[in-house]
Amino acid sequence: MKALGRRELMALAGGGLAVAAFSAARAQAPASAGAPSPKLLDELVAANRILADQGVVDGFGHVSARHDKRPDRFLLARSMAPGLVTPADIMEFDLDGVAVDPRGRTPYIERFIHSEIFRARADVGAVVHSHNPALIPFGVSKVPLRPVYHMASFLGAGAPVFEIREVAGPQSDMLIRDVRLGRALARTLGRSTVALMRGHGAVVVGDNVKTAVMHAVYAQIDAVVQAQAMQLGPVTYLNPSEAAKIAPQNDALVDKNWDLWRAHALK
Ligand code: MN
Image (cartoon, rainbow, N blue to C red; front, side, top):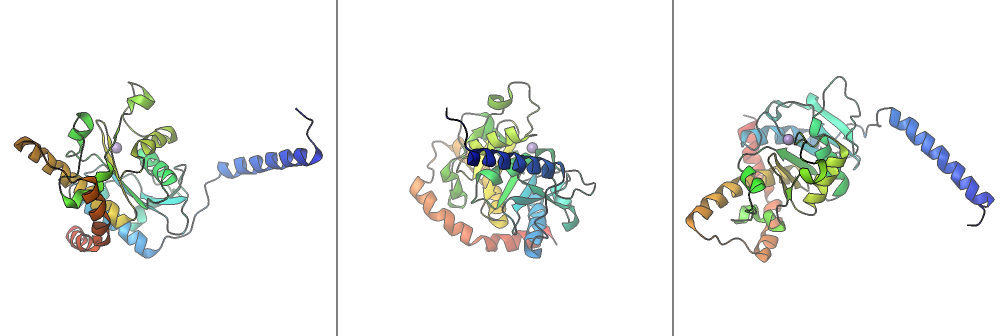
């Protein structure tokens, strides 16, 4: 290997300085992207209430939104029941799951679900994590969750199952409590809209808050209906072409459901 020239040495020194500056910055809280738009904040609070009202989440579960000012920041409530979330409970995080301005608020342990999906999927604007009981059977059996009807057409992209034992071994507490586990879950999700978490719950995404909520509601309904249909005999599912065609149409009409669900949840 040839000796380094002056230019290479300068570049290395500069790199060292950059690393030192980076380390110093990391010791402090990450910079805020500033206040999110009032519309986004309002949608995220409503999403929390709707998911509780529709039975997708109970006291547990959470929903996040990518920040509208910076794609490497996201918004997520402090650790609390989604059905009780107000704007003051919404915190800002960077993509390492570090809170920008915690002000004494405790974050969800499993915020790495959100940070790593936002990091891996530039197309995703919102993430729902639930322990939805309707979905659990499809994460613990060999029966894949599939689109039984047109409102769950996003399931045409598949609903892969995340097995935490493959990453954390047989003695984990089942929770996505760090970057490594979040990254593995995001890898399992791949390009899909839904990933089931064996013996735990699911993640559901959308390109914005409204579509993520709608997907989470219809994933739940599809799971119930699929289990019912399977008891009757062999089931005909949407084929890939049907599913791909109707999925964007449903997303485009999300306001019909959103307005109804919002009015019901916030009355
Ligand atoms: Mn969980």
